[in-house]
Image 1 (cartoon, rainbow, N blue to C red):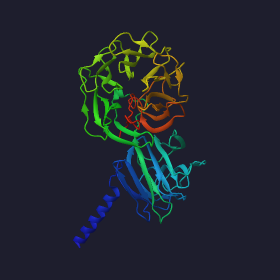
Image 2 (image 1 turned 45 degrees about the horizontal axis):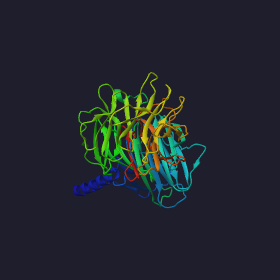
Image 3 (image 1 turned 60 degrees about the vertical axis):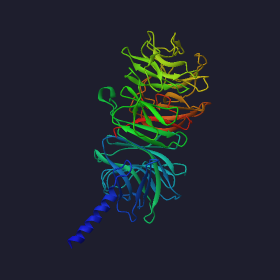
Image 4 (image 1 turned 30 degrees about the vertical axis):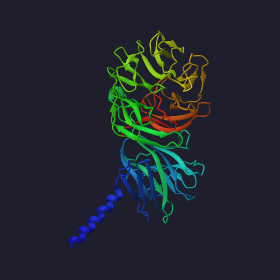
Length: 503
């Protein structure tokens, strides 16, 4: 009898382990509400994609049945992912993000769901055992069964946003839930709306972010953590290759396409594209570098910005490492780009009494710097970079105290053209090596004039060099240090960037 009990106990333990076995970024993997058919999940480490399968009568009414991958998160969070159903079925099957008070099938909950018939909705249960509710105005998406969904918690307010691929996120519901505990279960979910059927979905670009307070100052309180990511700009699929508590920033793709170069702790490091060991680059006596570093078009030289005691100045050294040679001697000067002749640099500097930031260029051999913009006190130019054909310098600038937009000009500073015209604050235009595309970061409209802060919900966007409507290629939590330098891959298909989070 004792042996039988031990065997039964062993199998029960194995079942429990199987139900809660961590998968990918999720600690728990189980069914909620005891559906008739058992769900499952798998994780592809190469593509960082989840396949989630589940059944259940519904996620609705006074109780739920579904498959759930989740973590326990305390406090505020922002979770974002791409969701896609497999197969075709117009019943109200659901995939999306969910936050629950507990594993009880009738728990307080809130979520953002894509339905099988194209409905995208925010839904919630205010009290345990109460009927689920949703906004009066349902939102219907085109029936391609693919959506980007985000769920945010701010105190007891829960906000659901959604977007079609290539578009900004739009709020679809907001609800205060007074009975959601400070620590909630948060994760991805699938329900079939048919007790006799298993539904399947793919979920990728899963990001679980815990934001800092609006008043948080990383210079005073420390950097909360960073992820190095690479992304195919044409299908939007992202991959995390390196994570660290603390600060690192601004990756460049190395000319051989096999490594990234980035700054961390005042120095430069390389890391293989697929992740792995980081290696410090020899920058001689320059040991207080910021996130302004760029590689010459011929792949031989490296430009850096280094605090030499007077403030940030621009230096040049071999890409293989060595002792840097100064280019500027007046601070502040922040490097951003090489001329295609590999003999001149363009940089942002503050000169004169009005304290405006303007764009300058200068030979790496010395001589006088040439001023290319002439801003008023409230205006700002930044992020200057030559196009690969050498015909234009692209940059971001503000005019008359307005939002930051993308511009370009001739290398002599003439024929300035504005390229973007929207409500966002657009920074750091980076031109692909084939000269066809501009990748850039867009900050929300409400940031301080001429600033590009850390810890914001931002977008990476893509537009043709020839002009056109920008396309969103990534939604992320980041900002300063995300994409300050050109991070295109040599084949013009991928970019690298840094995102931030407590987790």
